[in-house]
Amino acid sequence: IGSLKSHMRIHTGERPYQCSQCDKAFTQSGHLVDHMLTHTGEKPFECVHCDKAFTTKSFLKFHIMDHTGERPFQCSQCDKAFVKSSFLKAHMQVHTGEKPFQCCQCDKGFTKRSSFQAHMRIHNGERPHKCSQCEKAFSRKDDLKKHMMYHSGERPYQCNQCDKSFSDNSALVKHMLIHTG
Image (cartoon, rainbow, N blue to C red; front, side, top):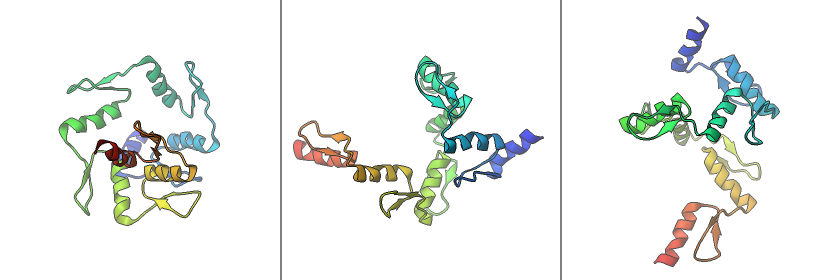
């Protein structure tokens, strides 16, 4: 009965196990226990092939598959294979065109819940990703990462025609027009 109740939370969206350190919540108590290790920094599961360590045994297992090349979940439509069945299931939406997460405000559809949630922040104005250096905040974590390059001065996108470099790939592409005409 406990596993059925836990499974039903997938459908209801109920996440009764709340982290006391951040805003994350979980469907199962074990997932919260695993998550708490991200706050303590503890990584008890070490890879024998390299120096990486992980908070859970399952994260280590999937990492080891990177070393072995094992991909047990094969797509029947193309040559892609995956380490997790959930990755294969998500990939299958490429072939079916299924977009189960629909925005009720603008009718956009999404294959992933995380993409849908990030999109909804556009409508509700939520900006949970705050810059530690200035007052700016962003709806998407990737936008904060890009912004942090401004503060650090990091410019990883190098022009192969001259010595200019950019913090944003789109700025490099725009710059390349100078050379190509």
